[in-house]
Structures are given as C-alpha cells and as structure tokens.
Length: 525
Image (tube, rainbow, N blue to C red; front, side):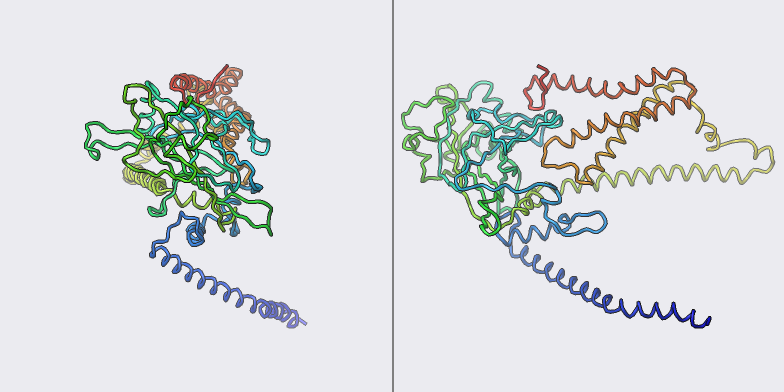
C-alpha cells in the first residue's frame, strides 16, 4: 500500500512531463525561428542603410526602416510588452479623423519658439496676414485647461485656406509693411533662430530633407547670411514669405470613408515678389485676386530659393517701410503609410536626439564620481576611528565616546531652534513628492494624454492641492515630535509657505513677460 502511494506522485509527474514535452519543444522551435527572422531583418535594414536609404521620407522603404528603428518604443505593457503603434503608445484613446472630398481642413497657428531663449511669442504678433474671422468648427475645438493657459497655448486659425485633395499653385495671400521697431525685432527673431509651428489634424508641421536625412518641427522665420560668406561689411538677414505645404493622405474605401491625413510638411522659400503697378491695401487678403498682377506668383509657377531673389530684411530704397507679399501653395500626395504610423518620423527625424542621451550620460557620470568621492572620504574616516577603537586598552578608554559615535545621540534629538521651519519644509517636501509620484503614476496608467497640451501641468497643480493633507499630516507629526505647542501657526505656515513663494516668483516674472509681449504672459484683466 505504501509503495503504491509513493508511485502515484511519480506517475503523475511523469505524465505531466510527457504532456508538456511537445509544447516545450514547439516553444523552443518558435523562439529559434523568431531569432532567425530578427537576424535576417537586421541584415536587411543594415543593407538598406548602407545603400543610402533615408528614414524621413514617405516611401514604403523609409517607413519600414523607421518602424525597425523604433521597434523598442512600439511596445506597451509593464510586464508583458506587446507590439503596438506609436499612436497607441503615445496617445492612448486618440482616433483618426476622416475628411470628405473638398472639405475644409483648418491649420492652426501654434507658438513661435526658439531653443536659444525661453520667450515664446504668438503667431499673430509677427507682421503677417490677419487672423481669419471664421469660427472654429465644433469638431476641431479643444477644451482649454489651466496648464495650457499658463503655457501660452491658444487655438487660433492660420490664414492658409486648405481643402481636402485640392492642390493649388502659388497663391498670393496678403501684403504687409514692416518698418521701424518691427523690422529690428524681426532681425532679432531671425538671429535667435525662432521657428513657427503650425498643426493640421493634430500633426505638427515638419521640415524634412531626404538628402540630409533629417526632419525638424516648425519652420524658421528667416535666415542670416554672415558677412564672411557675402563679402559685405555686415551680416544680412532674409525672411521666408512663401510656403510650400505638402499634405500626404491615405485613402482606403474598403476600410473607411473619405481620407486620413498622414503627413504635414512645409518647404519655406524667400522670394522678393514682383508687383505690377497694382495698389494693394496692407493686410487685405489677395487669394481671389488676379494672378496676372504678380508675375512671380502664378497658378502654374512654384517659387524656389534663389540667392538673386532673396527677400532681405531691410528698409525700402527710399528709406520707407519694407513691403512683403506673403504667398503659399498646397500639394496633396497619396501615400500607403497607415494613420497609426504617421508619428514615427517625429521620433527618428530630429538631429538633436543624441544631445539628450549625452546629457543623461553626463549627469550619471557626475553622480557616480561624486558618490565615489563621498564614499572614499567616509571609508577613510571610519577606518581611522575603527582602528582607534581596536587600540583601546582600558575600560575607561572604551567607555569614552569618540569619532563618529558622537553623533548617535543627535539623530532623534528634537532641534532646539527653528522647529517650525523644519516641520514646514519637511511637510512641503512630502506634499511635492506625493504630487509628482501620483502624476507619474497617472502617466504610467495612460490617464494623461500628451496630445492635450497643458494637461500634465494641470494634473501636477491639482494633485499638489489634493496632497495638502499629506503635507499637513507630516508637518504636524514632526512639529509634535519637537514638543512645540503653536500648532495653528504650523498649520497656516505649511499651507501658505511654498505657494506664496511660487506666486511671488510668478508675479515678478509675469511683469517682465508682459513687457516683452511673450505669449506666456498672463493677463489679470
């Protein structure tokens, strides 16, 4: 009987081993096959790169190369990571928009920003065509939040008229006069490399070059020609006034109705347009005017960048204001790239991505170096103290406290002075740390959508307010430990200490931002 009971578990284990053996071997074969496929794909991508294939184009080969380079980012899940598109990873819950033939597609003007300075400006602060009076349709409206207002994001229609699958040649837009302070300000913006940002169907406008294999968001206001390259005494400034918009789309009647926009590119051109003895009112929209009045901008022409026709940022021949004729053209191009992969080029196309990795590695190296230096000092100090303890001969010498043992009594000893300040600082730190922790947790759980501008900043502010209970509890607990009695004073100080500092700094900075006319300035009227 006993032998039979012993054999039963052995037989059960043998039976399970027999059942799982085929699945185990099948799993090994599948993993082996997957490794072979990955190796072959890596060789194929390496050959494509060696052949000079770009990663920023809208061709099938460029899209395949982009997808391969972003294969690690196209995974979602904390434990079991599975394949997904960048739209699912970066913008959870975002759905594509379909547009019908000839339907108006609004292009929105974003901020005018620069990497050299932290002062953004609004698009219509520039000497450009006036803002359209049309109202934004309900389907394109975005709900404003506190974060977007503080960051200066405001939804405004751009002056460009774009309709689905309706390409147009060079189209004059308006005439603008620039002079005096505005002209000098424009030169400063060009010198500080400010870029204009537009969005179409929530896609930021992109400048890309297949030859140089790069893609960057936005387009510059103009460019500067150094005196060393022109042979002149001073640097020359030129501005872009003609814009070639290329919009790629995907059309699949079997899957969805209408079209889906998959790309939004721009190629800026600087050209001094010729105007034939026609009186043009400043700021008046010229889109429906006769093209014969503008020989350099006709429906069948496409201006290009030529050094002889660059539009220089300088006053007129007689010292008057500079006249600028803005124009644009639109080209719709069909593409096979799916809507879910339209964000790939924004992550692989920027030439400045390596700078972030270098900054991270640099910071880690500094932390490691400082940690090693502190550890070396502590080891030397403790080694000296321990050696002194080992050399003690008498009991009286052993009872005498020396070296690092002198601080053991100060660890849990309440401070004699400034217990209120200590409690307030610790409570405020706990409140800030809790707010950032819950914000990161919300981001990991996909509760924050990066496509909604200002949502993350709004979440930080709201969570900071809601975590006031945590800060108050930690501050009160530490204040009681210090045997202090003014608990009302501690509660009030914890509540207003950090917010008062932030509000004071904000008020001072807002005065300077208002003076320079920055988009992030907040009006209290």
